[in-house]
Image 1: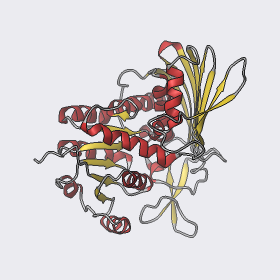
Image 2 (image 1 turned 180 degrees about the vertical axis):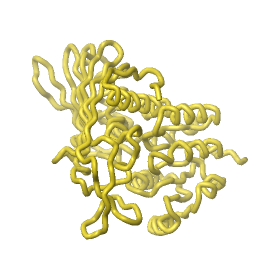
Image 3 (image 1 turned 90 degrees about the vertical axis):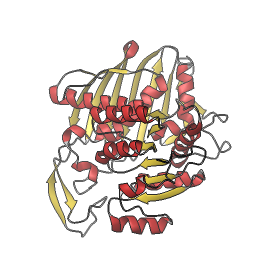
Length: 378
C-alpha cells in the first residue's frame, strides 16, 4: 500500500451537511487540496459535489483506495464514526473526526488503540479550543492569575429543538447515546478539562425530555420538518435538557446546565472559572472577550491575546466560529509532519468525553454519583 506523503496532504470529507461544509471552507482557506466528498446517498453526493466543484466518492471503499487521500475528515452522523474511522486508519489514512469520536466508551477505546497501532495522526474536533480567547483563558487559569481553582460553573443552551415539530436526525438516537449531553455537554466538558487541566472524577446527572413525542418528515430525512410537508409522530428517548454536578481532581466542584430547548438561547456556551484570587468568564457568543472579576475590581474585560498563534487579524477585526475551526484544522495539518500539539483534541480527549457522557447517563438512570475515571458498567 502506498503510504501518504505528509508533506503534501490531501483531504477527503465524509458527510456534506453543516459541519462538512465548515470543514471544506476551512480547508480551502488553508489551501489544503480536497480530493473529494462522500455523502449519505449517491444522488445527494453527486449534487453537493457538483456545487462544490469536487469529486463525488460513491462509496467508502472508493474513497479509501484513492492513493491521493492522505487525511479523512469524518463529518457524518455519530453512529458511523467508529466503523468508518477504523477503516480509514486501517487504510493508512490520518483521521480528523468530528465529535463524538464514538457513541460508546468501547468504540472510542478501539479507535484510540487502532490509531496508535497504525501510527497515524488522529484528532477530534472540539471547535471551541480554536478560539484565541480560549487559549488565553487557559494561560490565565494555568498561570495562576486566579489563584487556586475552587469552582467551575457553566452552561450550553440552545433553542433550535424547542418545538415538537423541530426535527433532526439526532433526536432519533437511542437513549444511551444521549443527545444534549453528547452533542453539547461534551463541548462544555472538554472546554473545562482543556482550560483547567483537571480531570472530572465523578458526576451526578438528571435528564429531562420536554417533548417525549415529536414529529418527523415522511420520506427522505431532512434537517427540519418544513411547514406544509407530511410528517409523522415518533417517540423520543433522548434528553432535551440536563443538569450536572461534577467533581474534579483536587476537590474542585462544578455545576453545569445543558438544554436544546431554552428559548432565546442560540449557541450560548459559557464557562466560568473561580479561584482564590479572582474569576474569569468566557462566552462563545462574545468570543474575543474574557471577563475578569476580583474582590477589589469587580469586572474588567480582557481581549484575546494579539500575539497568540490562534489570532490572525488585527484588534477590532472579530474572529469567530469559522476562524476557530480553521485554527483547529490548521494545527492538525501542521502536526502531520512533526510533533503534535496539546492545543487541539486527540483521540484520548475523545475517549475522555465518552467516559463523561456514559457516566452522566448511568448517573441519571441509577440516581447516584458515577465515577468517570474508568469504564462505566454497561
